[in-house]
Length: 414
Image (cartoon, rainbow, N blue to C red):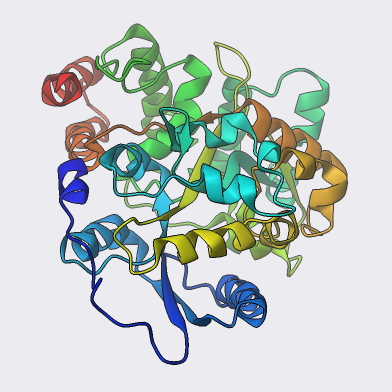
């Protein structure tokens, strides 16, 4: 994909400026009405100060085909001016040369406070010291717990387990298995995994210090002892203990039929109706200790968009301290000055001060980003296809993981 992005032709450079002002287009994957209303409100405020801007539109592309559609638009000379970029695609986009470096525009914008951006949050989006996308969403993975389901099954709450120093995967799996055995409800769901998006398994793998490839990205680590231990735990929890719903099992934590859900904090908005008692807590510790995993999304400006400098100026406004705080009600910000419970609490009323401090602030400041790699789509597909053989009761995990490395090893080394 990197080569495709690099070869993208200049888009519509001969189009004249519209008589009623410039038009900016930003690709996003959200269709959430509240998200779009907030973005359009910020855009309207920007246009009021910049009469040279006629329209700013937010073009929703379905998530499942988002990156493919976006790269097709770029290759076809129809690049948007700005776009949300998935963390999994970050190495390809940042390394492609397709994005405009943002440092000069952001640092020179009055009141922006470029130094306020967390170095850990921006690391994935930098190359050669330059920032190529603004990480507008830096969201920790955590565990939502249904306290009513746990009580009905006679299990302790996460708060009790944390206080006792036993908030770890072995204890959580035991509670989840007990809930399933006593009530028939699901134990732990890995939300959106669906035995397809293996990258979400990082939320458990990291407890065993298991990652799919080495830190330099050149060597497969799926056949490592740490990964074997992590996958053995998962397989047992799914197929022997019933702690994790198996393939094809339906269920939805936010409908009230599951004890625990591993997901990002933005899902808290689904709990506003108060249908059951719940808590939000950090991921449990694994054999290798405590850890945090964060998911990210960035906003980049395309050099081959129609108006890259105008788009960068709008991004500076969109990500200003004032607007970052507005966005924080849905998307945890990368600004150090806003990473505190008092500030985040103003836009996240469903979360307590303790939840914000322990899950959000600590998660962002200490978390590792989910794995991504250049040529990520091809590598991810090979791993997904290889892991299909793991999701049966009699699976030979050693063979499955070795086979996965045989598939992706040459791609990593390329």
